[in-house]
Image 1 (tube, helix red, strand yellow):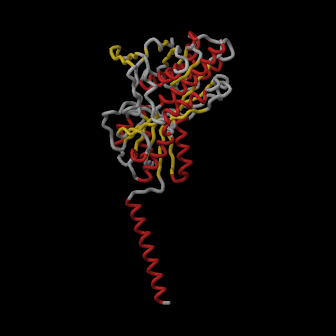
Image 2 (cartoon, rainbow, N blue to C red):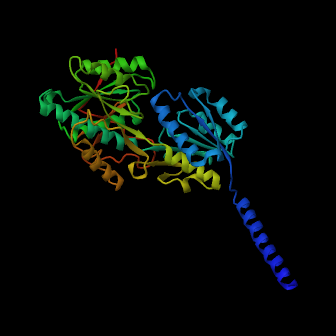
Image 3 (tube, rainbow, N blue to C red):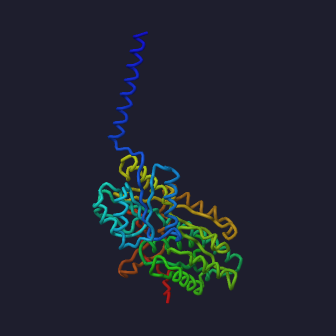
Length: 400
């Protein structure tokens, strides 16, 4: 009996020793059981872009619950970024996400080397030297733009078939913030999606020169509608363009809308067709996973890695289509969109910017591209780099 007792004690000691060793290994590996996560928004959740980004915070809370403490700062201007960064650092944040384009994020990251700074990309980072704790990311939005263009094209073709417009009236409008490559890439992909269904379709673009202004976006949309556009989309940050389409529909003629970032079916139920958006959840959740595991973010996040910059599209769930409005969309729209999405999921992307058009850089007329040879978007950066205006089929309309 005494021998059995001793053997039992020794066995327990061995097990306890093993558990202690495992605990020490886990500690040495730097695993965490609780972290603080900061979110810094350039606007508030009432605007489509910030609302869409905030969904990643919700996904984080759903996965980790009380294991993460989330602190949010909203309506932060680019040149006022230092204060919230210092505040979140002093509150002990382990990782901070930014949806704004402030260069101060990259500049201040080295001041807090133990915090991971993750910012939606605002420039081509190819060849750029960045701090080790600074990361950039973005979904390959051109894919969703192209697919939403297919939905718009299907609607325009339906209008042509029904005789409400002629082929020569196949005109789409785009309310754009600034003539940056991010915006130009998006509206070009949108038009090319439209033209995959309606080859004679053309586009008019109206810039507001601000990311967020309800009044200017309404005015720009109304200008485009007056110019004869039958379907509008946007790369701005309010519901203004959708409202303009809804108000026009049912009066003199119907004008339809394709959304970005947030479904517009509630504010524009009679005109909204579909919405494309970047889904930030995969990156944000995986980046937090990396912090919990004390691993390099680029080793954990699944996507196309460009140094400390990552992108992905439909194949990783970074781009999604929302709320196809069956009451408005043309028959067969879902099937047409699915066919293109399946290509993207298989890694086939070269069909978007490969076509018989010539593009000109609006800032340098000598910089010309022939798209017969094609152009690969997001090849080396998560930030879109296509910055050419397609001759003869895209024109710029002044807001004034």
